Length: 277
Image 1 (cartoon, helix red, strand yellow):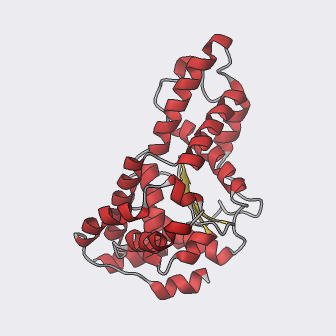
Image 2 (cartoon, rainbow, N blue to C red; image 1 turned 45 degrees about the horizontal axis):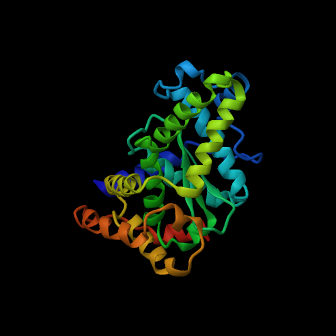
């Protein structure tokens, strides 16, 4: 039964802890990234190989640190952070890659944005939370980002960056050590934060994320409903969200038939308001 499934998963997620959100800010689960920075993530001869899990964690951890820095650190409200972590863990348990160690955090920014990094790092800004009206909307946004991770959308971009940089640097024998690793991170972030993912991957993450929250037990219209709110503000908005995502009305239109086919579920508005405000 969906209702029982949702309540049970959220309860289990509450017991997982939140070591990711320490006072120092995103300073755990980055051992792989630190090692990569010290020894070099790859060599030119290996630049064409698929990115393995350890390398994914290294890139993802380093990217997550940069995202947190860019958006003013992590929000200081512990209750809010723990609530988003619980909802996120419930989503991740039903995503495409539940074996990853996921970390969810609220960014200390009033801009409207949600972001993710390979290896299981997912962020939503305080500004985005202020626009939301229910737990189903929060779950939908987090599930969209979990879907990006599950489909390895960012890893595909990083793989291309690695390959291009290896070709460029090979003659100078520069593809080694921390400089190469940081070069890949820098180029990825330039593309991702300024341009976002390709449109087709955004639509795919919308669809996959919506299907996931419906399977957990939330109202499948969560993400669609949040996007409708943003669509009403899009004309005069300056947030990077609108620049890095497809036209919001187009996303809503593509989600309408998906939501209609998935039935109903919980919105949990009261619980959301109590935790976020």
